[in-house]
Length: 89
Image (cartoon, rainbow, N blue to C red; front, side, top):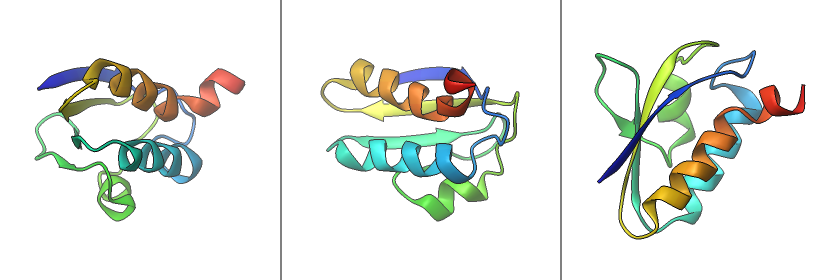
């Protein structure tokens, strides 16, 4: 299992557009993907309700875990999706 700790730079946190892009990216992969906040149980990263339910805000750190082939590439894509608004600002 590959894991990456990511600080959320998007001004809206992991809500709205970043959350939708994150879930879309996770859903494309055949791998199992989870996301968690420190001290919380991981949730299915392919569920928009589960991701929004984490209530991840700007500046918070999340842990993304991927199990399966090509995990590092998927982690790169998921990290980019989380910070899509910060990159375009």
